[in-house]
Image 1: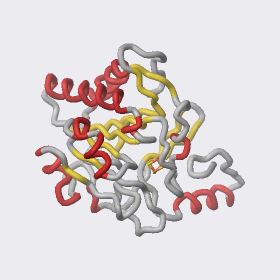
Image 2: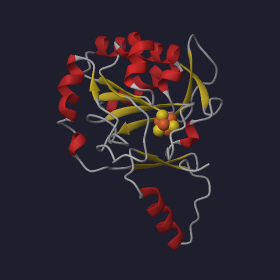
Image 3: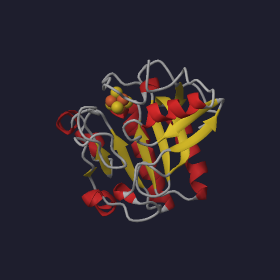
Image 4: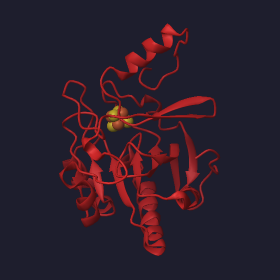
Length: 231
Ligand code: SF4
């Protein structure tokens, strides 16, 4: 989302980034929305640029939905909500999910709503049951660097992929995904985008990928000094 409209119109959301198409975080070809702000601070998080709750930009949910509709004209299978911590902005998350649900119903789109969270599933079920009902699938639990890696859509092995609706079950049951990309069974893949003078990496890196990238850049005389995986 290159030119977000600042300020609130009805409900406001603190946004780190929005991107289309995202092909490495869920089923098929997707819209990605990264919420700004995360107080969980997992060790070795690669998205530390999303931690500051005052960072990013304030956008109205209505404008964000308009941007999604505009992008979807090229074809969309789902929306991935990540961050940052989407559940730290429950009002904005709820308004966005309601708007996306209305849109897919009116436009008769078969798009799934997949959300990442660093909170335990038990906590989310206890405090955000109404939000979970609006989702098709959820990847909860904090990233734990000491555990083995998760599949291509998940950082560490403790993070399950939880279907929450019939569509979620169809697309993510058994950690599947059967069209448009290799699903969870594929290798970890990163997308690279260059926007506003910054290089964005989208996806879940394998362990050591960031260090390898820095090494390769250094060998070519390029030093990376402002990176999201280090503060
Ligand atoms: S991995 Fe996710 S939940 Fe953990 S600190 Fe990073 S953004 Fe927050």
